[in-house]
Length: 114
Image (spheres, rainbow, N blue to C red):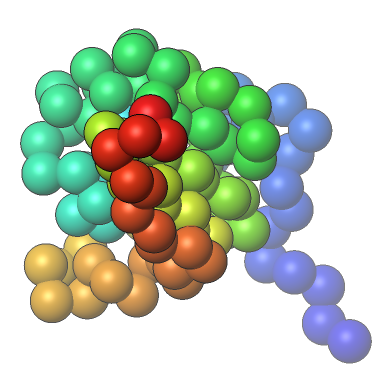
């Protein structure tokens, strides 16, 4: 079995440019914008600051690192949206944005449940 081209380091701060470009991780606010889950990065940052987004079950800051396999949960008004990250590139065409995640749950809550 061939050795992998690169290994995910224990200290994520030391990722090379090549590893970042390969899609190892990206900031949460940028991922939400690139994947088109939220329209603008500044809005994504505000939503994260408002503690409406969880990454793997924990409230996440906008600078949290998103990598493939992570679970993103968004609670906005009367909607709960859960998705598993399939890829985390820095850029993607709008027509391919839906391929970056797999929808796990997308449900609307009744007004009285809020």
